Length: 172
Image (tube, rainbow, N blue to C red; front, side):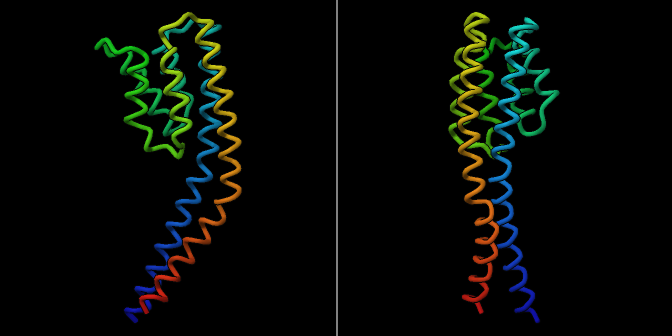
C-alpha cells in the first residue's frame, strides 16, 4: 500500500512538473505581447502626453499585470527616489531584481536593456524611434515564442508524465 502511494506521488510530481513547464511555454508569448503593448503605451505617453519617464512608468505599471507591473513600478520608484539614479540604472536594476519572475528569456531582457540606454538621455523623437524599434524586435521574439509554444507545450506535459512513470518503473 505504501509503495502504491509513493508511486502515485512520484507520478503526480512528474506530471505537475511537466504541466508547470508547459505553462511557462504558454506564458512567454502572452508576456511578450503585454510588453509590446506597454511599449506602444510608453510611446504614446512620451509623444502625446509629454509625460516624464517616472510618471509614464507608474501609469504603465497600473495598466499591466504581474510580473511586468513589478518591473515598471520598481523602475519608476528607482527613478523618482531622489537618489540620483538615471533611467538606465533604474531600468537595469529593476530588470535584475524582477526578471526571474517572468517567463521571458534573455533576448527580451536584452531588448529592454538596450532600450534603457536611450530612455531619459535623448530627445523625445529619438526615444520614440528606439521604443518603436524595441516593439518591432519584441514582435519578432513573440513569433519565435509562439513557435516554441506550439512545438514544446504539449511535449512538456507528456514528458512530465512519462518521466514520472519511468521513475516509478525504475524504483519498483
